[in-house]
Amino acid sequence: MQPIVSKLPGKGTTIFTTMSSLAAEHHAINLGQGFPDFPMDSTLTNAVNTAMQKGFNQYAPMAGWLPLREVLAEKINFLYHQSIHPDTEITITPGGTYAIFTALTTILQPGDEVIVLEPAYDSYVPNILANNAKPILVPLNPSDFSIPWESIRKELNHRTKAIIINSPHNPTGTIWSESDMLILQELVVQYQLYLISDEVYEHLIFDGALHQSVLRYPALFQRSFACFSFGKTFHCTGWKIGYCVAPQNLMEEFRKIHQYNCFSVHTPSQVGITEFLKDRSSYLQLGHFIQEKRDYFVELMKSTRFTLLPSKGSYFCCAGYDRISEQGDLEFARQLTLNHGVATIPVSAFYQVAKPSPYIRFCFAKKKETLEAAVEKLSLV
Ligand code: GLN
Image (cartoon, rainbow, N blue to C red; front, side, top):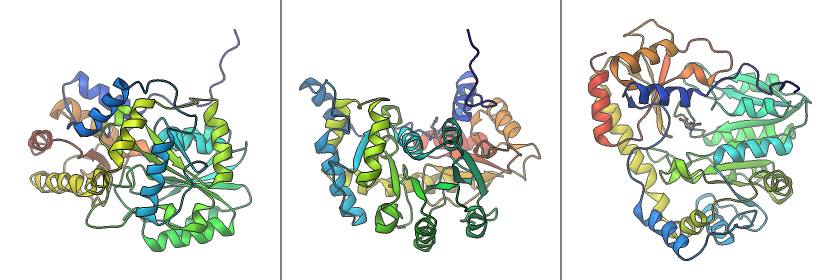
């Protein structure tokens, strides 16, 4: 048997799996991997259940259940004032991560360069490498994780095929501003780039801020794959359902990759989500709901020696621990799990060259009781 030549040499198991296993093994409270521990809306589980009972159990169309794509087009028009053709410009996918992988696989040729801003969600770089393309890593501004426009400009050249952006941002909880989007639009048009926009936290945005979707910017959208997640939106990360929105010419190629990979997505979930989404409050109240959790967590954490960074969106908040320990973040997060019973994610895991980061990431999308129990332990650290 020929040996497998690894497409991802040097990569092991993801930090999310590692920390969740460590948490389970040591009975620690898991504020690491980003998933809610509170129940999702029973209107949605009932709608999916009803869809199954009614017999919606065979293959959905390859691009997704059309009524779902129609209701999504309406939502996009309502929120972002962009008119999207449900038949040709939306594809339902098994999760946001799959949508991102498929978009990258659609556009990349060997040797193409893709700009990735670090810290970055851990799937982007492996997705680029698996396509024999080259990630160009550009650090976000270290003081506040804002966008390093000068460094980005320096990296642009004729091999640059795409840039990946993520707002609200995992792991830092920062968000893109309108002026960032306008600069991006100018560069993307000037350099004829493609844009992969990871918007899985679109509704989890706080303090009345507007989510700067690429769908708000017609010239950007013409070159974009915008990737979304129902799991993050409706607190059901285990459902693994999301969608990609892209202009027709891009979406045609995306579907060629998608149809030979998973082909189509769980039908009853799509039928149930369609019904649920018809009521706008299903998504309009989400920012407020998660903001309450952020506020509660921030208040509780005042009793600890951690230094929280501001979180403007997502499930996450980063924290410095220099008043507690001089350990590297990987070791610190391990010790915190083992000795103090709280699991987190070391932020160095969001960098390719893992130099220790002064931060760990907390997920605050948890029940009040969970946050209280965790912070009680953290206040002893
Ligand atoms: N998106 C989730 C996080 O950042 C994890 C998803 C995963 O486990 N791969 O925590």
